[in-house]
Amino acid sequence: MAVRTQTDRPAFYALAPGRWRDLVTLLHPPYTAWHLSYVAFAPVVHVDRLLATLGAFLLAVGVAAHALDELQGRPLGTGVSRPALVALAGLSLAGACAIGIVGAVTVSLTLLAFVAAGAFLVLAYNLELFGGRFHSDLWFALAWGGFPALTSTWANSLALDWAAGLTAAACVTLSVAQRRLSKPVRELRRRTLAVEGWQRRTDGQTVELSAARLAAPLDGALAALSLALPLLAAGVLAVRL
Image (cartoon, rainbow, N blue to C red):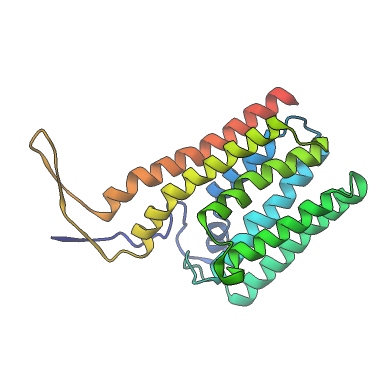
């Protein structure tokens, strides 16, 4: 027997369609908070530099990257117009770069390398440039996991050491875990017409399978992690500030 997939929401955090609700959904709030958390793991923290780094990544990842992603096939199914998405992406990425340039002028010109790398990653990954070579699970983990951690560490201390490398590696691994969970649940929510089958347990019980049943533990793990990482980042900052 085929069980129809619940297709009312393209993601567990997606709101009902509507103007302002579409904009909120577009930001992928849980995932944006998750990746912004990596910025807090710098071993040395200067409040002004931390806030500037958070602001830059909020604009680049939270707004620009997600707006560009929505341009590629409308994965969230929002009603935000194409011109609006282009404007959001362009203005947000420009704003992120502007913050980075101000940081380079006031802190160190070496930050310009991070500004250039960040802009390249946003465009190359989300627009699937170079034949999609940078649009892979590995580049997702490097760009949205390791890069924010390394950028924040350099912006705050102007140095990278083995501890920074271990922290960045942990952020990359967490992003790999996110990808391993999100890919199958996206497949269930956005590209599955029906699910067929039964689960027969050792106690003799039989459970009918459905897309909702298969997606629930994946969504639950993603939701829990998207809450855990900001809480962990807040705890780390509370100790250091």
